Image 1: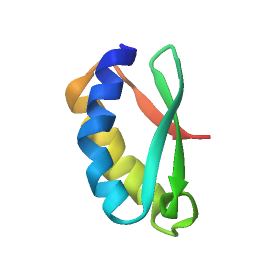
Image 2 (image 1 turned 180 degrees about the horizontal axis):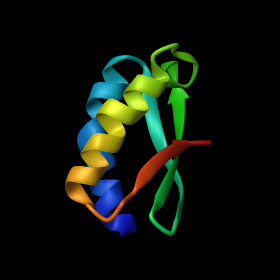
Image 3 (image 1 turned 120 degrees about the vertical axis):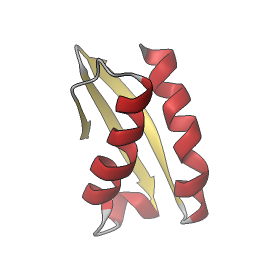
Length: 72
């Protein structure tokens, strides 16, 4: 599952990096993916929207068994 999640994140990274941010996979606990938003994404007021609507949606497309994504 880790490799598939990393592939999903790689497809999202260019968009995040264009805005001065990034994302790091911290852990996968069961069906929960834990991520750390970095750079501009870590302090952006829209970080929750980015996490849920962009990142979580993409991960679930690639890895349907993921139940949710959380920021740590």
